[in-house]
Amino acid sequence: MTMTYRFRKNHNAPYKLCRVWFWILVVVAPMVLSVNGQFRDFRNQEGKVIKAMMIRKSDTHATLVTPQNKEYEYEIAKLSEADQEYVAQWNDIGDFMYLPGAMRARCSATMDPEQLTKTGATAESEKAVMKALRWMKSTQAPDGSWGEKNKSAMTGLALLAYLGNCKTPLSEEFGETVLKAVVFLTSLNHGNGKLSQNTGDKFWPYEHAIATQALAEMLCVCKQLSITIPNLNEITQKAGQFLIDHQHESGSWDYGYDQTGPRGGDLSIAAWHVEALKALQWTGLPFNNHARCMEQAMRYIANNQHAGGGFGYTSQKSLNPGLFSLTGAGVLGLQYSPKAYRAQIVSGSAYIAQNASLEWGTPDVDLYSHYFMSIAMKNQGGDHWKKYNAVLRDELIKNQNDDGTWKNPEGKLRAMAPMYQGTGSENVIYRTALCTLMLEVYYRYSPTTP
Image 1 (spheres, helix red, strand yellow):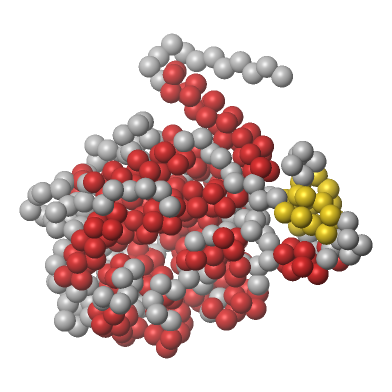
Image 2 (cartoon, rainbow, N blue to C red; image 1 turned 45 degrees about the vertical axis):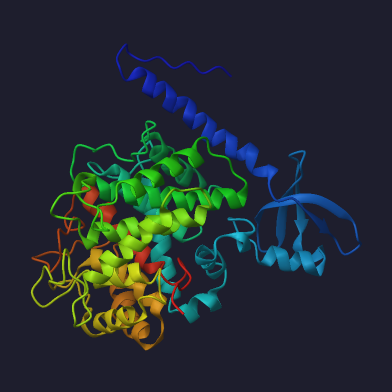
């Protein structure tokens, strides 16, 4: 079949043509290249051996593909005991046991209801996650994005939500959605490492950090599945190095990636960049000054902690009187260096356990703060986590709409720049992505603290 694409004569035509070819490469290439990966010998109970890679399974059958790209369906019960165990541990991310340790839990826990329950999740919380992922799929733009003004950030958050539930390019239900999101994010780069359509907006460092984290996690998954997405390695490396090279001398990051100005950045921006730095570390790609960058960020975060355990915005002072809403961001950041900052992590976690509140219909619906708090408290574990989870989980579940989105928190909120509040399409996707990621906290990352 021959496909002909005609464009009006304008300066956007070359860009559109590149996007067409890029999409063809990304959709077609993974289907071909993904079968060149982790082949192994499968043996049935009679001793017959087939060299193949597993690509999907049902309750009773496993589908295998050979190096010659031929598919075979085998009854699981007739495989050897060792292969039956292998199949039981497999899902649509493939042989997930070789993922970075912090990411591995998301793929094992989503397969094991008993394990999910032990982490604090419920069947209802998982239903809420799946409803949200299906809504996101139904509202994805043809170019793979979500959102309006801040498409890079919204698409990055949505992609993180899919990866957080172990939904990969091989997922039968969500594979195409995941691939289209990656295509959009990688298409933002024009050789300079920047991942935003809004580099003239001073807030674009938020977008860049979120998109970089999403591509870094995606790259970890692609390496695991032996999927080749054109330029993903190169773009992730350039985006990560740009992030490292544009750290403010304070140790944070600032608006417009200013590096020497008197404002010196803030904890909110720093938190997203630290998350990206950690994901970049998992990729195994080479980065100049990655460790030094992380150390400087840790010192900046630690210096923002108040004596009472809370963390301030640009100093030890809170933006909201009596409430240190960025404490989760501070604790989570320091958890990447738990031995050096153990006392500050403990005091910050205690502050959250004592002060965290989430209740629709009141001013206490700060979803942005709770995103960071949820990961930090899950990492911390123990009684503080149990107390916090009691605040978080059921309140999120009962305020989800039937379509998978979340109710708009109305009224004046005790929150910093609540962009998730409102009925616009970007408000809704932002709110939905944050809530989904919070309900994936039970398995999205393995604990990073002792």
